[in-house]
Length: 396
Image 1 (cartoon, rainbow, N blue to C red):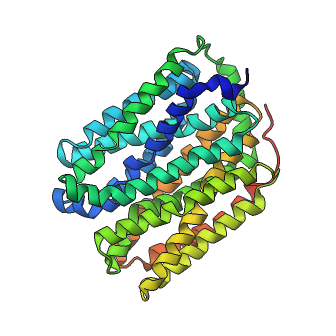
Image 2: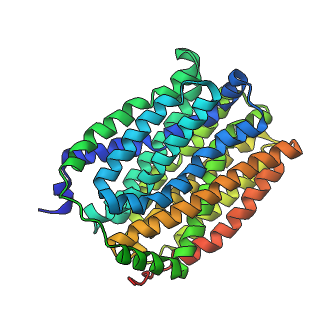
Image 3: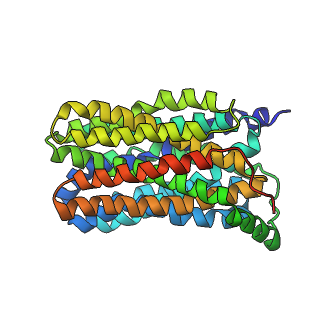
């Protein structure tokens, strides 16, 4: 029996709902931020914390993932984080700003661990189809982000406010936990990896230049994605768009990448080197930022900017995860590399997302923030090319 067949219908269904629920808790905040600020009376610092906290948690939570896997095994660790995600999603609709922030932090930490576990699950269950399966689930991530951003404001308007708009995503989170439970409880008894073996795997990953190139590529593309996810609606509102239109443009930016990511996942698996692919997709993102700069004087550039940003960012994300899954030498090393890349990468993204908002607040304009993002993306072109070259990290 092949790995794919043994994974089963319930496993695939669970993977579907997991992929569907790992972006909406973050993607729905940006379009609703204007309403949340007005309802709770948030200042600029609180607004920045709310926008950057999930990505910061993505980084901090990622570092805990290898320890959870060593202690509980991949499947039980996934069930634990899905359950925590449900509790956190419930908590952030109560108790004002404190409840929203704490719940968002809990959701971010849960998603962080799930982000790290998914490449390991794909490598174990589909060792010969890593790029294809990675592309499939990242396409679902992109779809759910786009859908969540697009319906956030209409749902709030029609169903009674931002709390209801956030709480609708409890449904797929609960379904993900229910469908993953048989996979968790049906796994063989887990034997913890010896501490010395884990230390050797970690040291091998830390020593490798490939690892740090992957960290840079993953971090820079994540910074750009979450900066756009968190700030694009606010930026467009400042340039004269309505909140509903700004949310729709964010939905466009995430939606156009869905078919691109799906097509790309079926293509990149045929190539040993992803260097030119990574550099080219990063260049599309750079052109998107340059187009976004032009929207301050001519709103006709808004659609091209969103399309270029969507195509570039939707392509670099699955590419970075495919690089993680194909550059590691062992299963344990995949978890270590995934945790390192996503841990440091998301911390970089959180810092960048916060600075983008702070720079706009200090200058009273979004122009310098967009220029900063463009400059960082130029660096992403170079580091993406390096990390995409063929080669394995030594096992020890």
